[in-house]
Length: 271
Image 1: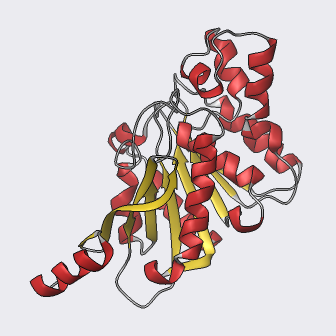
Image 2: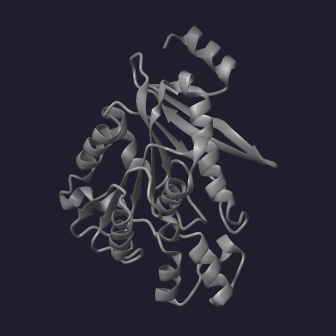
């Protein structure tokens, strides 16, 4: 971009443009909290299939440039418009703040589709770990303007009760729900906000991605979720990463082609 055009762009939009990337765009403001996203827009006329990325971090840490970052370059090369979002974190912000923020991002992307060459009929939600839970939640509960066309959760805790019982501790989930003890009340709340308990017929297609050596979110979390999705007639595919631990950062060294499989699935599903 020419210097003058670049400066005009900054004045007009207050965002940065570099190789198709626009940074720190506010998509919502809740009280005094400004929620921002980064966006990548391919060259060409579009509209393009689009991915909204949601980072992990146990609901208590992380941001739009952490954990989920290994997907940026592959999605860019594959010709997707993509957005990576921030959301409110626990314990400062309890449920459903983070889930509401994901829905806010979906609505914002649709509302601003023409500015980012978004095809509103081809939108995928992709999240990892806690972000995987949030995109799965959005996928199983989203209706109307909150509904998307497909969902890709990486190593997601679909059943938060299982997560707590295996450790016999709430951990960061305590801050998420505003409770500090494992008891009937906290387990009931965790069950209510688990994607597994909200599965019903008529949901958008899902692609689950999980390493079979995950010590933080057991592999069976995805196995059981897929079984329930398929049992009620939904499309729910599965990429298993042999030897994969929690976090996609080390998967390349395992020789996994999960990225190629994922992008092929997205292109087919969002055709």
